[in-house]
Amino acid sequence: MKILIPVLGFGRAGGYRVLSKLADELIKLGHSVEFICPEGSEDPYFPTLAKILWIDNIGSVSPDKKKSPKKENVFSIQQKLTQALRKIPQSSYDVIIANHSLTTLPIRRAGLVHKTLYYVQAYEPEFYDSPGIKNRILSYLSTGSYKMNLFTVVNGQTYLNYKALRSSRVLYPGIDFNLFYPNAKRLLEENEGPIIIGTIGRKEPNKGTRYIVEAFQKIKKNIPNVELHIAFGEPLEFIDQKDIHCFQPHGDEALGGFYRSLDYYICASYVQIGAFHYPVVEA
Image (cartoon, rainbow, N blue to C red; front, side):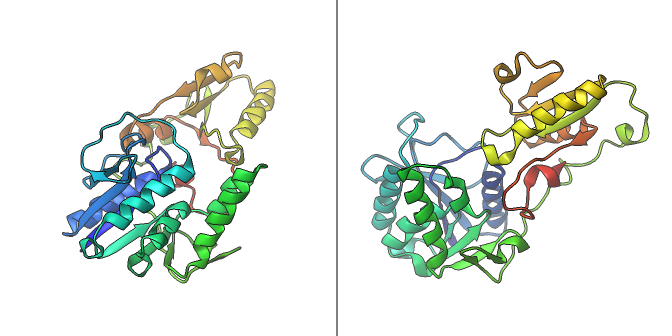
């Protein structure tokens, strides 16, 4: 099969890793897979065997990226994606894999709904649950993606019947146990050094990093021999915080090493409880 995956842009969240891994496994099974993305995006953080088709400002598609990454408006990105999908002959692909809710409207406008599999990794309308007209519009568009009657597959039981989302199909993300495995020596031997608590630092309020920092400060008062290690945190945010250390574990191998360096992993996300949470599973 020939498979196309439209994306608004590439990023570092776990959902992008899933798309890269999914594309790689489909390619290994003998299928052709391509991503299509506005050229204002950064390059994929998670490597993939799939080809990348880049969309320029007038919606033309090229395998060559001409512009440097820059921040773009989500509405202009949707417009470019719509233009590009309309220019692609419908016979070029057998399956379109939609992932982000805001890619579904360009797919519908391009007349590709009948070829689309919608893989839902989160209930995205809640990501726009902040004040402002823009967020209300994005939340409305995102909710509308679940009402298009697309062939929908979710990544966990939670989303089979969650608010406006309905599905009868679950495809769980995988974990590579060659990269994510316990540190047997640390488990068996008594640790004479500091107790290390770790987390993945996220800017989104609902990911709860600020609550973990507040909890650590209270723990520190009672247990002086404790440190907080934050992966992907910004050191300047914690410059006045004693025993808070930030790390940048680039790539899955380094990330696995980060988890193995910890005594405890803490997650404080407070939305969509029960959903598949990549750091918790990996740790």
